[in-house]
Image (cartoon, rainbow, N blue to C red; front, side, top):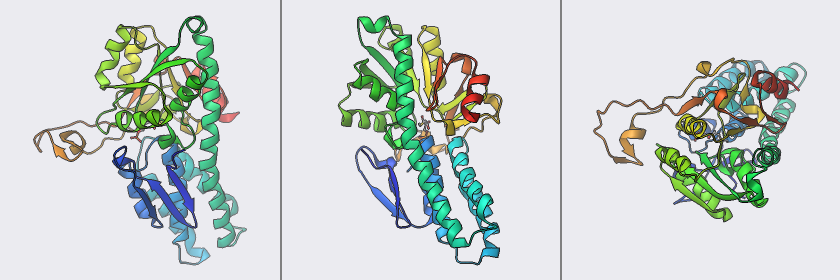
Length: 354
Ligand code: MRU
């Protein structure tokens, strides 16, 4: 399995995803500002991996602390604020820093700094390891739901699935979320072929998902993002499954820009559209999708294609990195606890609180 991130002897090591699949470059750092930069630039990316990386980034910041116990609270508050400012949409980042904050809150008074840091290190590892385990459970729940939803079709043939962006090992640790469902469904003989939408402008689908599928020997074809409707019209897609960066109480789900258009097309063609994501991606403090902060990225991500200028440097650009698919378009939200189908307000509160 690809080692997208790891943390050993105070060093954070990551595979720089900007160069994949053409170059596999691993980077090591003990500097938390460099780790923040890796999150900002999408060298590490994908909601669960951003969360796990955020936990390790806090650890790098803590390991660099030279002061006494009295000075630590202000240092820690600033560190968490800096990590939280790296990317706005994937709530997993805030989930991870909250977990680190909880350990701090519970132990700062009683512990020496050394004992406190040891507990925080354990939490950073736990955040990462939990996401690995979550992927296996999500895959199992997803395959069960597919077997129910496609019971009749599966008597005569296998299924073709559309996915968007990258939700595999690179994005999630483990086998992935949506890609974990696809991997297990393929192993169980449910899948004919995977269609990976390229995911403009940074091409996570074309570069990363395709790379993971090729590595696994799973049949796939890549398409431009705007092709999903014609493939659905021609019966070349049976269902879609993607990940999410933030799912709010009513099931509205933010994911890589372009996801919403696939979901609308799926609805029009009567095909189920699923989201697969861990509970760390659910944010029931927000009631509906319009409240989700949507990251707007640099105009040059569009004006240039991997460094090559393709539009004039003055072309005005709107570059939303994510869109929000309404819960009403989603057949089911597959988590490690259960696949929530139906009333999301009730079901998502149950998986978060239960
Ligand atoms: O900008 P990115 O590459 O971090 O966006 C990633 C996505 O949108 C993924 O689809 C999402 O995080 C789900 S990953 C399990």
